[in-house]
Amino acid sequence: MMKIAILQISPGGSIDRNLEKGTEWCRRAAEMGADVALFPEMWSCGYTIPEDLGELRALAVERDGEFVRAFGTLARELEMAIGITYLERFEPKPRNSLTLFDMYGRRVLDYSKVHTCDFGDERRLTPGEDFRVCELNTARGKVKVGAMICYDREFPESARILMLRGAELILTPNACPMEINRLCQLRGRAFENMLAIATCNYPSGVPDCNGHSTVFDGVAYLPELPGSRDTCLLEAGESEGIYTSELDLDMLRAYRAREVHGNAYRRPEKYGDILSREVREPFIRADRRS
Image (cartoon, rainbow, N blue to C red):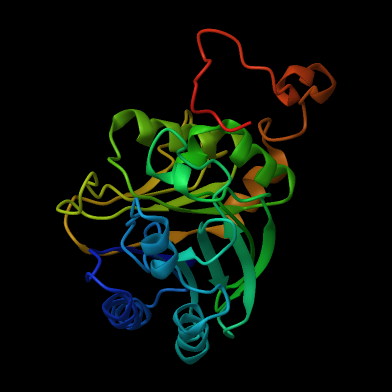
């Protein structure tokens, strides 16, 4: 049983304060027995994207800079994996990024948001290039982990490519209202790919956020049950706090080895249109990046 700690917490108003508060809440999570702690989207700046490019660049931190490295040091001290999120210094414009450290403080995954919200403030950011999967060492053993960030989960291809690359768990930092349709979306992504998805949102009181962080394990059927089971292990309320959930990796792996979803019966030779870059009405948008 691997314990996941969702840090559904409000930003402190500055990078220094977010480092201090993030450290404090990671220590609390470790005291609760967490194996992995996950932050909401772009924790370093509290999901702030200034219009002025100079201000935006000044707010960004280096991928290998003091802010991010501090959580690697903390992960090693606490013997707890940490998924830290930040506005990453990058050219021509910053990126929305996550770095995952294992329980030994080793950097095992760097990911930048592929599906930036180009219809809004994130048009001022550089999109990421790829989805990666790593093997994460935790106190409960190894698990194959990938990442999506917020709007990435709107596209079924994000979770699907991570499943195809071996992910058993997808970490999903978030910064938007999690209402019934988005919650159902995450449930569906977990179900159709037979994997777990842990999502960390900001609590109510943070602009345009409402908590409701979740963990879905994707295990819909068990031999001892006559019908399907609820794959939702956790749905947080709206308040700030640490919300934990235990993921049964043995149960998940046994399920993935026998059930019919995932990759066994796909027909990828029929999916050519998915790779087409053509956009037709009614989906044409003037602000779409080429």
